[in-house]
Amino acid sequence: MKKTLLSMAAMLLLATGASAQKLDLTVAGEANVDSRFNKFEQVAAPKTNGMKKLQDNETLMGYPASVTPIANIGWPTVPDAISAAAQLMLDESWYGYTVVGIRYLLLGSLGENTEENWVGVYVWGYPVSQKEEDILAAEKQLNEGDYELSVVDGNKLTANWNETYFATPFELSDKTEALRYGFLYVQDTDDESLAAAPFLMGKFGEDEEYPDSESGNSPFLVFGTFGEKAGWYGYSNEEYPYVLCVQIIARKPNGETAILGVDASGKAYEKQYYSLDGKKLSAPQKGINVVKMSDGTSKKVLVK
Image 1 (tube, one colour):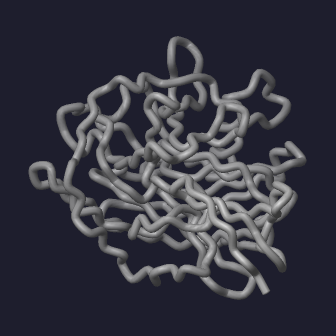
Image 2 (cartoon, rainbow, N blue to C red; image 1 turned 180 degrees about the vertical axis):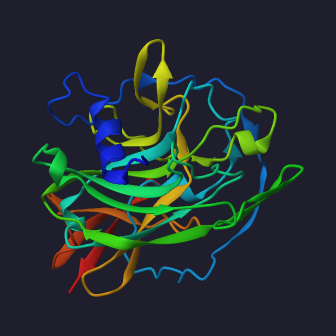
């Protein structure tokens, strides 16, 4: 009998922890980041597939490099890998947003849905309560033909963004501590084919602050087995700052669209707000605010 996505979410989460009695967001270790790396030096203008271009005053959250596709990774030599994802710890400024869909880039097929394999995209919300029954899941099964592949011609990449919307969206609140979002797929064993490396990645720029290990943020995870231990493994670190090209589509309380990640322009955006005395703010306040930009620069902004 095919597993439901919620049971899969619980299984993949429990497999990372020391105890099967509680939820655990721990990442077991680092994967082999030295595997074959195909770098595409020229990136053609990505297609937006109908996505409304975000305006300067709209909120952008998440990993800024996740929409700057530069390469595929020769897809990792992770035995029995079944999922690739990003993990993002929830920020209180996102409470009230509703997860409605996901955007992503693919180079090859995710495989076919069978009785044994659930194939598609998902967003899992992991609860502060640490109770399995409180896990939130938005999902969509995908078959070949449901998504468009990016195209490689020599070193030129045409990045075709896909958007998939969920039938069961969920709202972000203080009851959810983290989001894990990405793909469940079937490994292709032909490692000489781009289809064997279906995921595109971006790379944090030199001025970007790579998430520290204590933050809980993981821009590129893979679920598989190393040695005898099955679990989630980090595919990126400070030396190899790779970011899976996947974003969450969210709806603000006022109905506007927001993306957990930058839009395809790569333009710097307002990342975090601070008061003059250095206090972190969830939103701009009246008076002078110090604004940290996604490119690492800061500026002072007067809000009347």
